[in-house]
Each structure stands twice: as structure tokens, then as C-alpha cells.
Image (cartoon, rainbow, N blue to C red; front, side):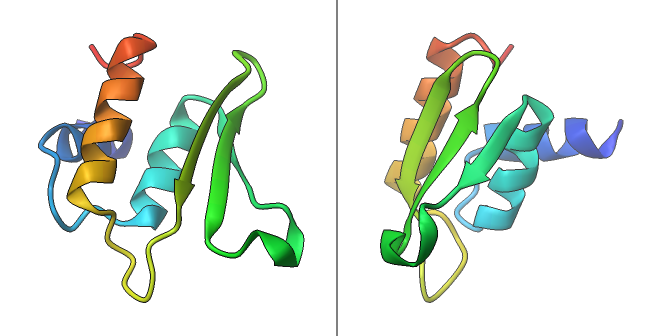
Length: 86
């Protein structure tokens, strides 16, 4: 099993300790790029897929790096709706 497959399998379990860095790596597999609009964006970030024009917006968790349970569920539902999860 490749690193990408292991990361996807971990995401699909919706763990409580999934980090923003892991999410960035996972979304990069599907062509998403991290975007935060300069110094004024604060903790708001967007992941943009230029090919599909899909945008995922969320608040970067702080002070810890773990993504909240509700956000994980929202991400799962969104990725499932756009047919990235199999």
C-alpha cells in the first residue's frame, strides 16, 4: 500500500487526530493547492483545484493542528459528493 493509499485510508476512518498537514498532502494528491490570501486571511484557508474549479474553504485549526470532528465530516461529505472517494 502506497503512502497516498495509507493516508486516504486514515482519512476515511475520520480520526480525531487528523492534522491540517495531512489534509494538505491528501488534497494535493487530487490536484488541490493551498491558498491563503496574504497576511489578512488569518486562519481562513482555501484549497483550490484549478482543473475542476472546486474550492474547499475552512479555518485552519489553532493552536493545535488537529482538524475538528465536524470539519472532518464536512470534508468527507464534500469529497464523497464530488466523487473523489471510492
